[in-house]
Length: 75
Image (tube, rainbow, N blue to C red):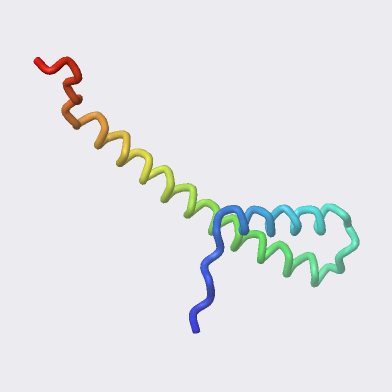
């Protein structure tokens, strides 16, 4: 069965927890390295999702610019 894709919000929440764990200084070196690697992966997920959202918004704005405005005046 395929794994569920993480939402942007889920990835950010997990990334925030990783940052807190790393900043606490309580993790061992090995744990810190694992957390760092996971953080890099989560950062990539977030960047990809933001890029996709930006592209989608640009497309919507572009489509809005090319549409003929609705004539309310009935002329």
